[in-house]
Amino acid sequence: MPHDEGVRTYLVLTPWRLCAGAAVAAALVVMMVTPWSSTVAPWAQTASGAGIGADLQGKIDRYEAASAVPLILAWLSPVVVAIVWFLLSRMGTQGLRRWIHTRSGVIAAVALLVVSGIPGSLWLASVRREFGLNLRSGPQDFLVAIMAGAMTIAVAVAVVSALAWIVGRWPNRWWIVLAPLAAAVALMGSWALPLFGSQADRAVPPAVAVEVDVLSQAGGVDAPDLRTAVMSQWASTVNAVVTGYGASSTITYHDGLFVDLTAPEVRAISAHEVAHIVSQDVWWASVEAALVCAAAVAAIAGALSSRRIRRWSGATDGVGVVVAMTPFLALAIAALLALSVPVVATVSRPIELRADHEAVELLVISGLAANEVRASDELASALRTMTSINLGGVNPPQWRYALFGTHPSLAQRLGVLAAADANADVSGDQVPATRTSRWQQPN
Ligand SMILES: [Zn+2]
Image (cartoon, rainbow, N blue to C red; front, side, top):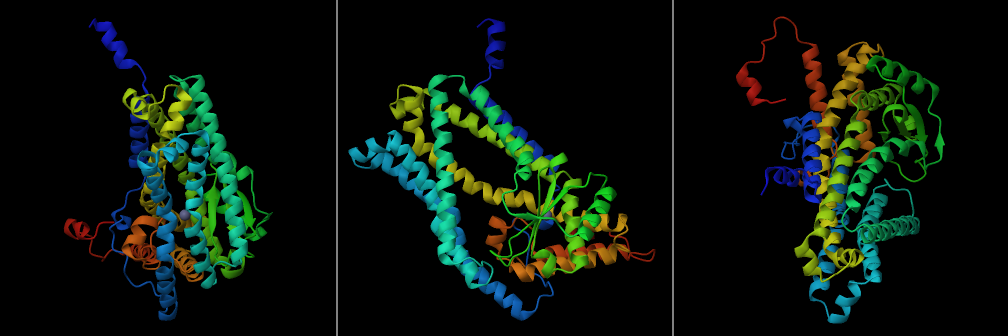
């Protein structure tokens, strides 16, 4: 083989090369940007005292026990349905196999995947209703689930139809445009999403807005947009979230937060959310999502263009391959989505721990809290209050924490805040940590 041809072959972009490149880039970003902390690893010890009363702890334990099976059902149902569908597509009766490999079979596969998660979600909603967390009635839950399911099916069918058409039109090159497009949608979508608030929004109390301004200034970032989501008619739980990045950064408070938390507690939660903005957590999460989307599209292209897979599917044209490959693609996508749950949780926990830590710093630098001890106490109080309202994660079972815990347990978060307190109290006569004691207690 002439030398220059070898170089050309090496440089040609193939779907699998793009997939590998995007996947490696995603892994590198995750490795470099995540503030890895062994204290919140999936196997971290979560059991310790959190100063929660026995009554409340008992109620939380009962809620966690009652919600365990529906939670797992909602998580794994799509995978189980995809496995059954895949097996039917290979081993069902001839008529069924033929129908699965038609366009209506593709639509049925998409619909089944979306619908499969609904029973688990409805069961979970009813458990949450039993514990006073969900204020919707059973029929209301059913209606919401059906509406959301129908919309998801419509969007998914439209996307799959568009994909099949594009693959049919440009069988060999479609992914060169669609992989970057998928990445751009992920990146732009998370920027633009806050601009289309779907809930009936209210302004936040003026005092809260002033505090967010001061906290943002202390963190060296522009003040985000602020919103109050009117959730209290549907759920008794309270939360605050950051969405968007850069100029579209938005903090959304559940309206119940201003009723159930004290002013210093709300301020501490604001500081935690501003800390996410200062660390650009939404931006980096969007970059990671964009790279994963590009890798996924490239992987689909790689599978569809593989000669062996084409032969195996028995299809001749591009659309035919998409139709023939649907059971396999559905299984792969369902499995990857299920796998992404513990991966996202594992990456999220250290980021949340950092936001707690930085929230304390922001409260002190901004002058909103007199000192570090005071700031830590306010945040600890806010976290305790929110946990007692949301009945979530004081000392979650290890499996639940590893799979679904996007936040450290309350015990862990309080532990870190208490450690910060202890550090603030350090004076000259404190014995410095030796190498050995550091090793014994990694932090
Ligand atoms: Zn957070």
